[in-house]
Length: 157
Image (cartoon, rainbow, N blue to C red; front, side, top):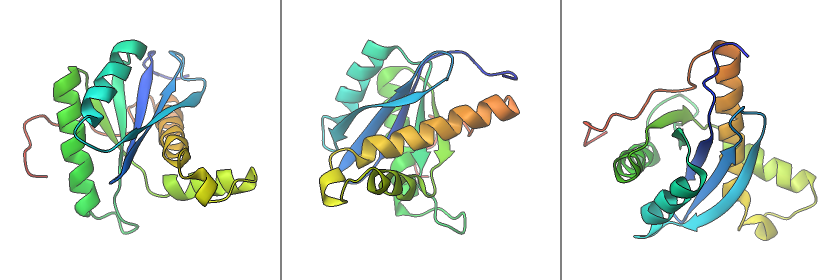
């Protein structure tokens, strides 16, 4: 472990209908699913409650950019969600490229014998596990966080 910052993290996969949540242990040994939160007016409040329970040092939030590395409407939505969550919780949030995390989650669930329809309730949690584990592994390998901290000053991006 190079300069890995020890501490619990919550991984957040922001979707239009649901928000997948995962967590890791303080040593970053393993990311595990926590729950799927409906995406509605109570989402942020539920995530703040989870943060109060797990006491993460930061949120690791998936940034859905397209395969060419460009921002999309979903990218702007994830940035807004990250700012709102960081403000509401008083905890920092880092943004991590999540390309293929949902695809990887669906593939993992298929290989375990689950259908896509039967996985709907947990695929967001598995995607959150995938992006959180990627962030942990990246920081352990490089000694740097896997992405930038969300700026609370930005309002549009």
